[in-house]
Amino acid sequence: MKCKICGNENIVEENGQFVCKVCGAVFFEKPEDEVDAIIKEAKEAIEAKEAETAAKKEAEEKAAAEAEAALKAEEARLAQAALEEYERAPVAEETPEETEEETEKEETPAVNTEPKIFEEGEPLYEAEKMADAETEEIAEEAEGEETEEEPKKKKSALREVLDFCLPIIIALIVAMLLKTFVFANAQVPTGSMLNTIQKGDRIIASRLEYNFHDPERYDIIIFKFPDDVAAHKEDPTVKVEYFVKRIIGLPGETVTIVNGVVYVTDKDGKSTQLEDDFVTACVPTGNFGPYEVPEGSYFVMGDNRESSIDSRFWTTTNYVDENLIIGKVKFRYYPSVGKIE
Image 1 (cartoon, rainbow, N blue to C red):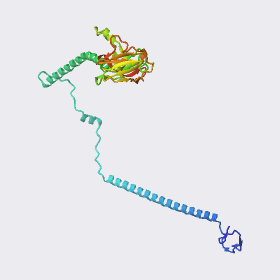
Image 2 (cartoon, helix red, strand yellow):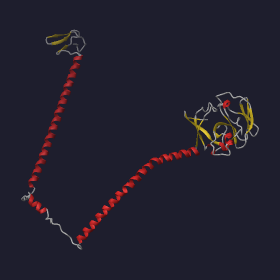
Image 3 (cartoon, rainbow, N blue to C red):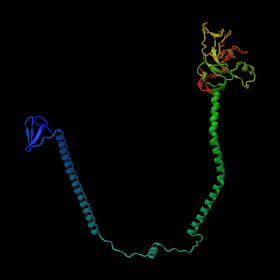
Image 4 (tube, helix red, strand yellow):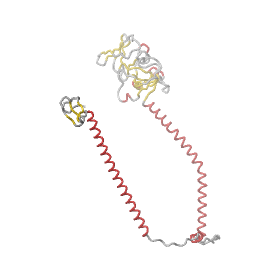
């Protein structure tokens, strides 16, 4: 313990008093340490809080008891009022119970079980006759419906077949129309267009492409082989072979090939060396030309120029007439899918 005056701990008890040997202060009670004082204050605070909580709980319990007592009193009052109302109600006079036999007699009228025979001319006779006629008509209609069931069944079966086949027929007709007027489908049997088109590729060309503009340089086209067309000119029913090549010379131009390099001279006499970045399967060689492309015709070559039977080597003509062009090649769909340019 410490002195409250000087804080020294040298305190002794003398004659029921506590004396500090340093400052001489006298205390009638034993001085407490700060920790003990804090603990004491905490205990007092806790006790005060518990007393407050107990008082609050006691008040709540008292209020709940008063509310419950009031509720019970109200219930008792309502029950008493209902009982008094019931006692004031008039009592109905009792009547003797009727036996089941008497009740049945009163409710069930007497029925005459003897059959009555109506004579001709009486109203009921005519009504009975009309009812018999209606019954016969219904029976005849039922027989007629039975006889019509078999044709209806046959008609239903035919309708089912038509419903199944009609979408297939429509799809085939649409496919034929697309193939005839919109798209051209072909398989490339050679490597004359390597590496742009591989041998065995299946390609699709647009038949409508040149309905809107003329063919352009570097377009890849499907066309009827001119030598084949000339050979079967007298018999147009013979199916001619289709070729796939790239347009090099346009109508009115002059095409000349020098050491494998292609030059084009336009109508104004201006010469231009053409692009050849699509020629990747070989190194072009040879000298050909000059070829003066007629109006309405085109000069074509394969991208694999060292292995292509094109405008340079045909026998009947060196050009493709615009009427022989089927369409512009757009896509490859087998063995892979991709755009062709």
